[in-house]
Length: 111
Length: 111
Image (tube, rainbow over all chains, first blue to last red; front, side, top):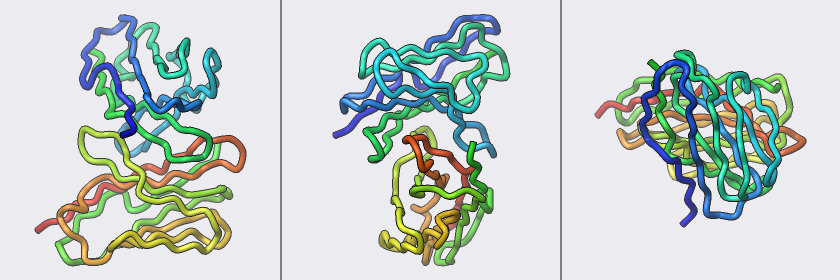
């Protein structure tokens, strides 16, 4: 049974804090993705990675960074959280052009 | 960045009714995927259509890919309360494995 797990389902942080969102997949997929989901805007791609230590900017990378030190783990970092980063964050993984699998999401609130 | 427009954004119908959700773009995609997302969970893939004009059926759900591979539709026959959820279309770019998502259609089927 394929699995993408995210470290937290709910997270509350204060403005200016550094925030780490962790994602782990157990399918040995090369590609991993971070999206944020906001009502009426669908899923917007923040960053993605095709391989270990490799990263590419998505459509809305400002205010975020990522790390992929191991194939199974892709971390999203908010260097200094702001209220406009309050959102649902979804991690996904995919092998080539096969099915993309999503984690359950982390609902982040920045106060 | 390629764009996908999904309509309608919200749909509330009675059990037994039929409905269609549309996904349109001015860009050509190599494939079009449809996902369903339930509250508190990540999106789950329903179907992928690849060939222009392709029609796929999944029980009461019928998916169609436009001849020019720029648009798609999801038709649900005799909707049931269990069909309630957020439906997302996603187009795969012709190069690479990035997906561009539509804004989503929140479907509510009332008993």
